[in-house]
Amino acid sequence: MNTTKRLLLASIFIALCAGCSPNNASSTATKKAIYTVDDAKAFLQKVDTDVTRLNKPASHAAWAYATNINYDNAQVDAYLGEQLSVMWAKYAVEAAKFNDVNVDADTRRQLNLLKSGLEIAPPSDPAKAERLATIASDLAGMYGAGKYCRTENECFSLVEMSAEMGVSRDPALMLEFWEGWRKVSVPMKEMFVEQVSIANEGAKELGYANTSELWRTKYDMPAQEFPKELDRLWGQIQPFYESLHCHVRAELSDYYGEDIVPLDKPIPAHLLGNMWAQSWGNIYDIVKPQQEMNVPDVTKALTEQGYDEIKMVKQAENFFSSLGFDPLPDTFYERSMFQKPQEREVQCHASAWSIDEKDDLRIKMCIQKTGEEFNVIHHELGHNYYQRAYKDQPMLYRGSANSGFHEAIGDTIALSITPTYLQQIGLIDEIPDESNDIGMLLKVALDKIAFIPFGLLVDQWRWQVLAGDITPEQYNTLWWQLREKYQGVAAPVTRSIDAFDPGAKYHVPANVSYTRYFLAHILQFQFHKALCDIAGSEEALHRCSIYGSKKAGEALNNMLEMGKSRPWQEAMTTLTGSPNMDASTIQAYFAPLKEWLDKQNEGRNCGW
Ligand code: X8Z
Ligand code: ZN
Image (tube, rainbow, N blue to C red; front, top):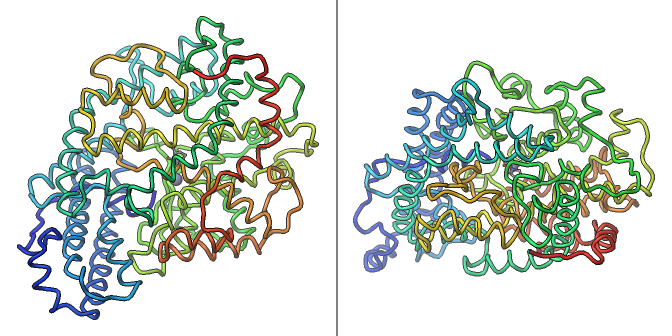
């Protein structure tokens, strides 16, 4: 997440002049003669200055609230978030006056980015805009401060329950936490419904049918083409996912018994080592090959080597430095939040910030000393290095080529955390030979391939919700239909009529689109391959680490510096030589594992 996060928040007081509406054809016609190319450029300059100026205090307020959830910080966060999104919406509507001016391609791109830049658009009715801002702030606070209380005196935070879901093998405890966490989202539903309705008014004022269309319009292709592109990519992955699912279900059934994991049904969602069943690396020990495999246990290594939170972050920074990126500023270490403070509520969901869009970079995490979190640190730093690389672009280009790119950079680097790299930095003693590769590939697939259908379905749900295609009564049912359809997982217990399970996933109350992660999981393999080629690696893709390659670093930086100044297809070409997103690199990366899985699955009943 980057600073545009501020623009998710809603707003107040938008003074629309009659005739500025993009839907008002006659007034546009009368005005087209008066506006020139220079006017458009001057307008964009003013937008840049005004938004940049307001973004800074709004970011400080958002940071203060996210790292200290209380009533006062919520007021300031909501107020400044509202000011910023109202300003943006006003300019986005005003940009329509240049619709018929024959501007150059660059100016047109900025005008288009301005129009589609908001996630949640405030309507011009000040009361509604204010309400939207309050809802956004309240939902964020409810998620961040959310707890499950077993008894009056025994409560658990999400961090505590997530940690337990990763290591527990006790179905009753996992079920308790699974259900417990989902109580937090029940009271969110009413506000969420209200938010959808107000945001759709705002989207209409910008000229979109609804917020769903606004969200699908951000990908340098027609909004109706984008879902087809996702279907195509999912089609490339699906057979592999189904093989993985088949193996995992069979092993879980062996472990817990067929009464808990039936062999012809979706997998119960509380048994996969993760609160949302979105990545499954934590159950590697249950599903691993029978043959002994030496797969580095990074969690164990970190503990044995006495790594604390700061050392984990410094080690991740060191990877970027080895590629030739400048060190992070001292203020990064002074101002970041690496640990959950005891005395106050914070939003623990990991995020990366560029507060002043210059050098004030920070991350906010409640770091756990695990291999999984070591990866998340790389993920977050990827955001920070991207933010720094595009900081000199005009405001409207300060972002990633498409949302998936921002999420893919740190993950790309983390794909280089291979046994060879771990040995180089002293975390393990010896590099396992190739006979251990299946184990290693399985571990990566449990994290990355298992994630892909989840990455897809969250917005399949949201697009329908935001388009108003389904009623609030159908929200939870649709959620579980999609969970079953794409992931082959099911709720372990019947969901009550008031359940709002999507709200128990951070990005729903926070209004962060989720397609970004689906795309990132495809892009990161393409980026990894391109960088390995540039680094001159002769290893198999899953053994390649670009650690220390200045050439790879330079190639990566060339793409990062572009920000969103060009269509993402061009950024893609800059690094990979091809303008297309494509999952065939994933197929190549995991080819030996697919073969192994298919052998394991012989004679098994697959599918759900
Ligand atoms: O939200 C995140 C990052 C912050 S942008 C930690 N991720 C998604 C999630 O946790 O659900 C990374 C992978 C998917
Ligand atoms: Zn991220």
